[in-house]
Amino acid sequence: MRDHRSVRPRGWRLPGVLTLLLAVIALVVAGCSNDENDSAALGADISPTTVDVAKVEAIASLLPADIKQSGKLIVGVNVPYSPNEFKNADGQIVGFDVDLMNAIGKVLGITPDFREAQFDKIIPSVVAGTYNVGMSSFTDTKEREQQVDFVTYFNAGVQWAQRTGESIDPNNACGKKVAVQSHTVEADEEVPAKSKACTDAGKAAIDIQKFDSQDAATNALILGKVDAMSADSPVTAYAIGRSGGKIEAAGQVFDSAPYGYAVQKGSSLAQALQQAVQYLIDNGQYEAIAKHWNVQEGTIQKSVINGATS
Image (tube, rainbow, N blue to C red; front, side, top):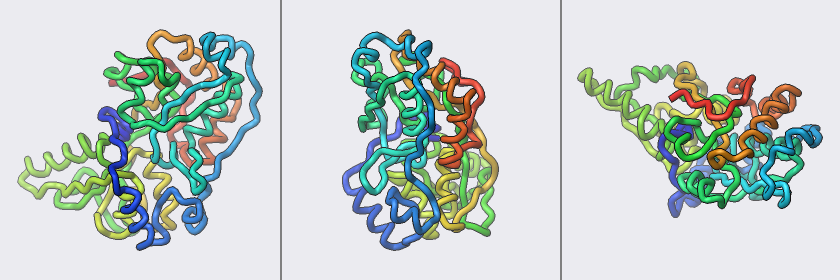
């Protein structure tokens, strides 16, 4: 997953990726991209959504003094990773994670300040105090909890996709071409493990096609350059929704694990965020945001601090 975004950090875009994406999008108007005009053709809404919520003094009082005084929450984020965090046609960072963090900011009476960063630099920057929060579809893992505390807000698994009408079995994809985003768990662990199972059984290895962005991996599937793709479940669901019926799920979601916001170990910010998330869950705003981005299958009923399962 994104290293679910997850156990392995996802790398930053390499030079030339923008050129690659523009070329691919030019080939197929109905492909998946960050472009808002493209989304109109696919019948998808990538505009931000807002919810009605007021500051809750009892929760806001838990904030560290420096954050209260500044009135800002510095949030490190890596894009693109639709639908969680990415840029629209105007260059604005949008997505499920962004809308939810903005709602959390309302509960806490502060304004999130989203700052782009390389994915693998975000947690070290939280530890160093450069960012107050790391928000980039991080999977809460035992290993990461040694560096930072996590506030859980979502559950994501791995979900494969195929071109509509085809039949791909994620557990028997020997000899198939499978698209993944580089430096994700799918690229580094999940699909390679499936490929090894193939070769151990005397079958052809999976031809793992790695792309620098998820949009490029999705477009490769739509264009028929690969047989399937593997990504985090909300990412795959969003891509399917934007494909105009060109791709569909292959198999079920598996290996679910919690996403979490990363904060400094021992900071009262963790309690503030956890209670803010729970407030939004209990009062319906969380569900409304999830439904806007069509990620409601991964919603949770209880936010916890450090909820890693492995």
